[in-house]
Length: 378
Image (cartoon, rainbow, N blue to C red; front, side, top):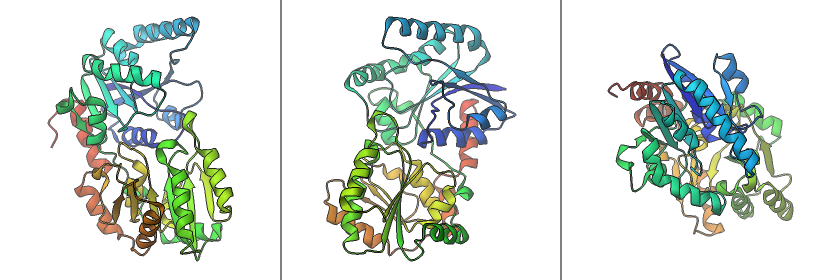
């Protein structure tokens, strides 16, 4: 049994958490035992399911700002690795940035053989002090990590550029396609519940965060609305951390008078229904590793409009279009109006393209198993 300590889950459902759960549920439980380290006392997303599946969840505090909290933090790391390092073959550290790599450093010190760093972003987001540590650790990471994973070439370049880039393995943000395929009955039901049966619905999925750029999406939507008053917008996601744009989004909705045309739906679990209800998916992000939300949207057959800051590796269907964030509101609005005329891609064709381009979770999980076990990947 190959035993892994997984790092990277939080209390909030987002792309990294979804990625981890997708692979967690598809790696062979007869070959792999996966336990989790969390950095918050609050339950991580899916914690009840994780524990029910027989995995352990360990709490380790974050590095504090005072001498006392820093000492507590160091003692906790030392005690944990002294007690548990011998039980694990690997630490798998999923990261948007690396201002702190102590978990990998301690894993090396206490003899955990495989130490995986996995890049899930393509640009730093955070305060300047942490950026300084992040930049320093980009140079140090090759001394403590043994394997280098990334969700895209951009994500690999972001964390490993200048060293170890040639060693990086691109791990696709693969999904269970059938969980997201189009459903006419779900579409009809949800659109009726929203009382938007006769409207064209545009959707976005992501944290209400600077990176996701939904405040700009409100501007675009308002511009497009001047040409077609039947448009409606749904944003699925919740505010998270210090970079929340929830207040700005609400302010723009009120200023434009869009209260009855824009729905902030919060976090949702039944994405098959929500995606089926949409006519277009739009993601004007400032940067991304490889956005799972847009992968899921394509699995539903939706046309997808994204910013050109997003990697071209996202393109699975032909009905995806990239547009520069330097373009004005009119160009973005017109692109949305044009793409609303496109038809959904048929499910059979979607499935074939996902398998061909490596976004089917079953095949990708097999490749990960071979990689972790040191076997040849087919």
